[in-house]
Amino acid sequence: MADDPENPDQVEEEFSLCKKNTPFLYDLVISHPLEWSSLSVHWVPLPPVPYTADLVFGVHKLVLRTHTSAVATDFLMIADAVLPTLDSDSNVAGKNEDLVIPKVEVTQRMRVGGEVNRASCMLQKPTVIAAKTSGTEIFLFDYSKREENQQEDECDPELRLRGHDKEGYAYGMCLHPAAPQDKVLNAMHVYEAHQSVVEDVSWHLKNENIFGSAGDDCQLMIWDLRTNQTQNCFKVHERDQLFVFQSL
Image (cartoon, rainbow, N blue to C red):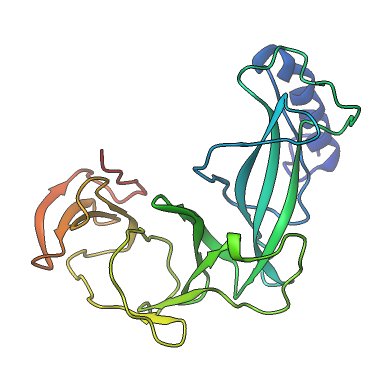
């Protein structure tokens, strides 16, 4: 039983050992239990807001998601991470009598249709979050238009993106003119060249017409919207495996 990874006593012992050693490894560690597991975490790329109760701290935003294995309702979640500012000293307790800080607190829950495979913010407008679920649609939410601490009863995104006919994972976001109808935007073009699953897609950070895709066929492909054709194709692996394309 001691070698069983599902043994709760062993898990608790390893967790306690990890917590005991964290002061030797990190300046600050915050542990926050979630009701359901989140397979990823994404920092919202916005500057922190001063924590009004104590200016030693700043409030950062996090994007979390639920993975309930279809036994409960799934949500895209926004959390506030109250962390010491760069100018604060080592006394992270600050001047406030609130002993809970530093802390992480979920402040918004947006219902989605299915488990969220991937979620991230749009760099050009960080309050807009895309969520790719176990279904065929991608949901776009703007958390700045939603009230905090409000439980949503149905999936009602600002926009639904359609074009997939199966579950997926990869997507990339870039600002381009579009004309959605009834909060739905269908695919404008389908790019077909990969011979296997596409694992990641990313737009060029300085050229809105260029994006890249990476797949299990070991290929990295560069695409141009002006021609809707591949501009370059590279074999970057000898065996299929997950890898990420990120432009510079």
